[in-house]
Length: 294
Image 1: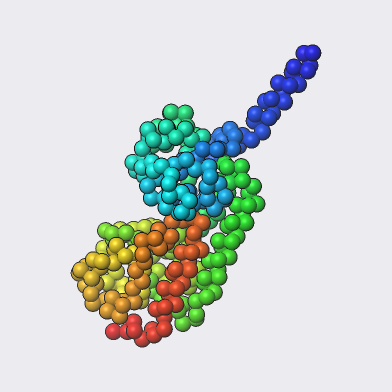
Image 2: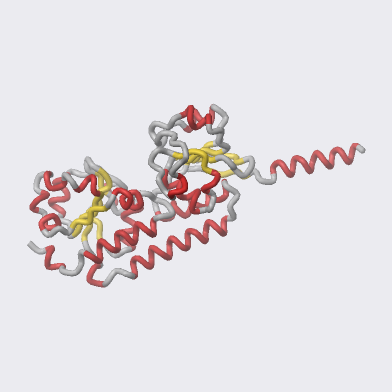
């Protein structure tokens, strides 16, 4: 009888811990996921998109205010942003997993309230693959599925690069991420994509991934092509010296719609779409390189 009870107890322990997984997040903290999460809050758009790319959108019960893809998440409760998460809303949603950026605020508070937090922040192409794998493990999605999704993304980026004609290669590009202005350098994931597409970045890796730029730096660099979001493009011509830049004079500027900018600035599963947008810009502005001459 006692042996039978002990055997049942052992079976219960094995069953209850069978799905437990320990993952190291980007804070270098080991996080134990006791069982596959059924209620997830995501406070970073790229992580929201990663959850959905892995086929787990239905597990989301709340997202940050900037998450806007796919359309199926449109009606989910909004729970603040990375720097100002709504702690009460998150706790009230009773999530069994909170996904957020390492740079976000609130992780310690969530943990102290008994929530499981996984902090991840992809900053490169390799990071996107790595983060996708970690999220897959956390959600009990087979890693082979995560790898399949990544291979599709990577192959599509390569296809975008192959679609660019030879004469469009080697263009010197300035990519503006946001006002101030902040640009995407060679060491950013955007810079990686540009490099894979055969473009040259006027912002060196030594400046850091997304440096704040003195507008005069861009004037001196004289890029062949400028990539920028619509909201930033509006006041570009008012910056000292910018009206006389060759790229501005010859209208070699790709200004992206808001929804396109979202795709471009997120290190996540839509990187292939971002590569196609950049490839289209590079190809469309390479027909007459003489336009770039004074």
